[in-house]
Image (tube, rainbow, N blue to C red; front, side):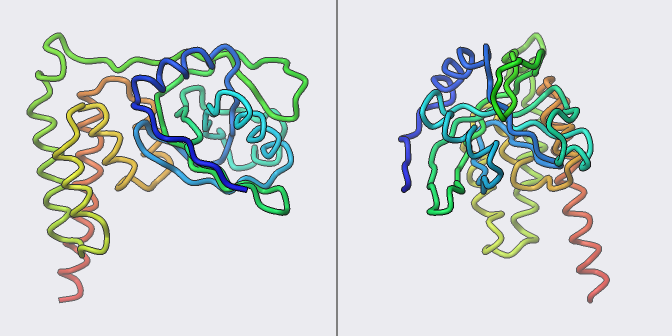
Length: 233
């Protein structure tokens, strides 16, 4: 059985998410970060998270993906987690004959998990706070320099990677993305792979600093690629 919900814009989904923050379902995983505006697939197989998915699909379809503080926490019922997490909307779900689910979670916003609820359920729920981006006094327009620097890095990345890598599509998407906040998140989701760096991106509310952080990560990838090519030449 599969189902798909037609996508709403992020503004509408933020309103829905704000209501869900009174009791937000939390899916804790080691080394995984979901960034706003980006889709992420998950295979759900543990009984407690299958129950969580079923309840989400029957209700608000909202989940927060929380990063476990350590890999050992994956086997614990109430393991410590990082309080700032990416929350999203289950856009599509397919239930397998064995009860497992394949879902796609569309990142909607950053949240701070403020208090765990005693819900009597096999999975965890938290009271949460929807987090807002922090802009300089001049607003998004004041970040034109940082935005241009990130776009230039993405274009350079598209020049050094083969077309099948998806880098040219990322460059096109970056040029069409009006929001500096969303631009940083979309590029980070595609390029930043290390959990520590992805966690730094999700935790950075200051959009200017986030743009600089992601630009530095993309530049590091370009440098690594150029060194690799030089070494092979």
